Image 1 (tube, rainbow, N blue to C red):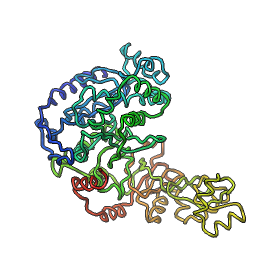
Image 2 (cartoon, rainbow, N blue to C red):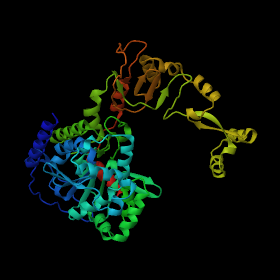
Image 3 (cartoon, rainbow, N blue to C red):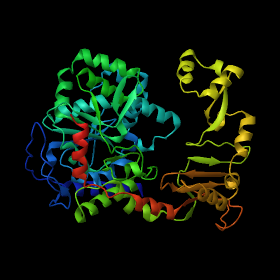
Image 4 (tube, rainbow, N blue to C red):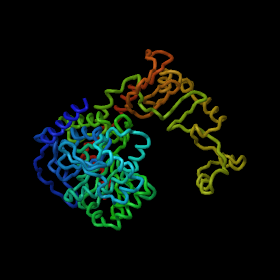
Length: 520
């Protein structure tokens, strides 16, 4: 029952805490120009793979009070089990077994926490916690998710300052979320090319208006040098300005970047950070030899799979790995010719019959548009791209032709576009076999997805996930009228893709080349 599960969980956490007592590690020597290559991994006394300079890094892991027990246990058993320094943050300050959970919001001004509308969910959590309620039972509705998102934007900047205040001597501060995973050997190898005394703020760069920021879910890194600059301007005047700005913003990671910019620190993009899970990730030539750094939107199963892969790989191969290695060990063994009740998230080309929608991601159709609907600036820009026939069309008919999405076509244009499709494309939506035939006919297609009345083709490789049949009739895969979702992969083409890939450089060599080209 629930009581026994709670007792077992507490006992497990206590045992892990006692087993994870860590000894001191020698400090790595730092050069202000080029840092020495990180020493190789070595087994620790606790069965973890440790590094001589691991104590120079602090991991900050952010989660929410309602999902604490859903996401944190797996991280404690894997990622955080072998990390010397880490701090866990949630909405509320609390202890979970032997682990202390810090409040993300402690440093936010009371006038916001106890009166601002963004904190309605926070005040609800405080009330339920005071009444001894299980916060994980708070119903996950669209409204509660929106309230949690509004609250989340307030967490980034206070967390950054809190970790520095608690641990001011760390060389690097690494920020991840509880549904993310980082490849530590690759992350530390990359950071060895940067001087932590310099103001570095590293991550996957996105933009919100004129603010360039490191996207929070993919993980980001701030150096001690950058933290010192932020701490210097951490005063009541700046805090008031930052909180006012956060109240009117959508995104906390962008507000952290804005505060760092106020301190004179700008974001620098680094490779290998992705916001997809194993199921969503697209495996292609561009990522094949890139060192894996991070994943996001992971379930406990994914975290466990990545942890086990990394532990096995680094103990029997080398310290580092690239996306090719993950594909060969975690994805390729699960790619079958066909799989029922499965969605491999194909979407590049979509077929739903002559009267349906074709919401292709990569295909465009020729559609006519009125020249007068364009702004003067759009006309000026487009005119430069028109050929002689297109210019004549504009001058004689007032219309021009451009690549257009299916849903932007007129009914007449849709009919014309439908007639131009190949016969396998026209039949693709009728059965799994005909969907596969359309994939075979399209030479770039590596996989397909079929559900009654729909066929999706894709030019890259995705694993996808199991989907429930939801009462669908269980029938033979060969049946013409199939009432289940079916995914399939073109194994011959996938094998050809793998065989055509050039050998990957060792990760340290790849990082050296990257540093030579990108780091100034």
